[in-house]
Length: 475
Image (cartoon, rainbow, N blue to C red; front, side, top):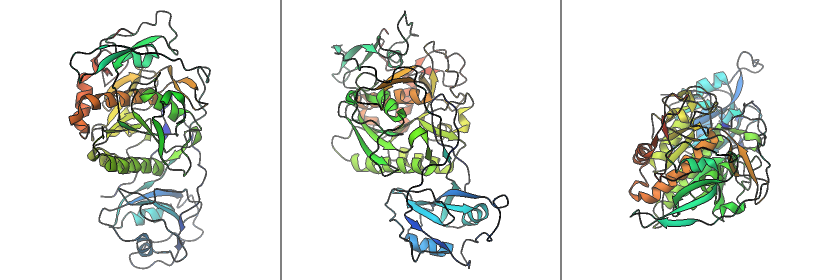
């Protein structure tokens, strides 16, 4: 069965999105149109206006049984590859074509390529037996993030106050007394009363296991990461960039989400390995193909690591998404969960049904965890999506975390992007407590949801549970 859909990939901050085209990368190969013949894609007639047969950038995923070299495949499609230098199947790269015929192949756990085609050509190509999925490779953008707080606050140092925890893998409960409110909320059974404390600052209490997330690999699919931030404690590194750069975060969003997962001051699990998978450009600009490549890269590294004696588990954290239900995204997330990777995704910021948003809308089909956002009053955040495709809620407003402007930079922003990494951090904590589930995303999702706090989340329709680490602390 062939699929065709449209995806918009964006950061899930509580800000509106606008469309824009990304900067082009050099193509890996150029295929030249040739005369059509049997078993070849019928080319659009020269001079056909865009209004009649519009041109777009498409992503094409090949059928599993298609193993021939790329030049052979394109030759059969009706393209002359004599002068093309097509990348090998293993090259995890892509480009945005500027003319019909420009192509880039990518994929490790799949075989795919992007190419600019007319609508008629895409339809004809979709009828090929060796093509599994063809859909537009959409591109989106977001406006600049407005800082809610000074972006260069001094990172407050703190010492954990440690007390014994009864027979829980010999771990101990640590008390952080200068925590941000969002992580404090997951270690208390009750709604937080600020009592004069600044919601977007420190001064709240967070109770957690001092072994939380030790050695767990967390793949942050985002705008990049400020890996040199001192609050990451040397546990952050870049493992993939769809843009063939060093993975630096020119936006801030990726550094912020990573901080909520595993930074010393702002993180839920303070011992994880923070792995930077850059799939979005500055201002949240990115493409569907880039996100798929990021998932693909995480799956490949996970498969290499999971046989190691010190392997503790892998999590993909995705504070991004778009409207629709693209089958390519579903396919890649299926590959990830089938490989044993746990996946946490943001529910979206449109204040609408999350089932129409991806990847959150797939949470009823595969064992990924869709996260809605709440405010300090345990109400649904005004922007948060809702409905049956929201599995759980976590704090997502006025969240203080790490930023990209230096080794001590911080910022306060909001969105389901900020709720998702709190769940990611707690998943890392639970993997250490439950090593039998390290390759069982379905079992871990069931455990996470059954361990959540049953609270009345005002304004929500679905996901009436709050993220909880089970420690009944006082915030």
